Image (cartoon, rainbow, N blue to C red; front, side):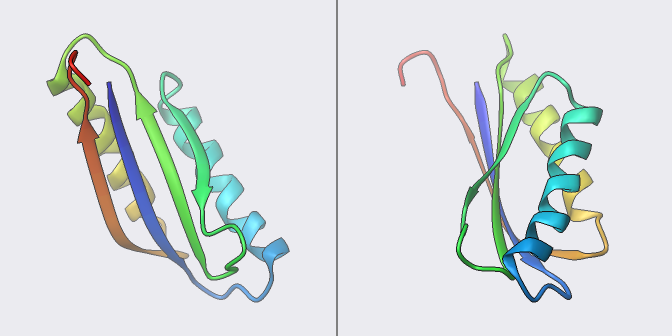
Length: 96
């Protein structure tokens, strides 16, 4: 199992309503391109120019988890209306 946390700086956003208008399409696009992952806004709910998105994937191999999460990161990072501030990937083994 693997998890990815993305810290985003949103572009020209001035309210929480506008933030939802930016974050929801990002979440929807990740789900559309990678239907086997779970994705949600996981933090910075009260800040209208920041968003944290969490993505999780379950796979039989750590390598496949890393590959899927890297593709998800590239997809989000490529969006012109946001700036990816940080990405933290974690792979869980059987003992965690």
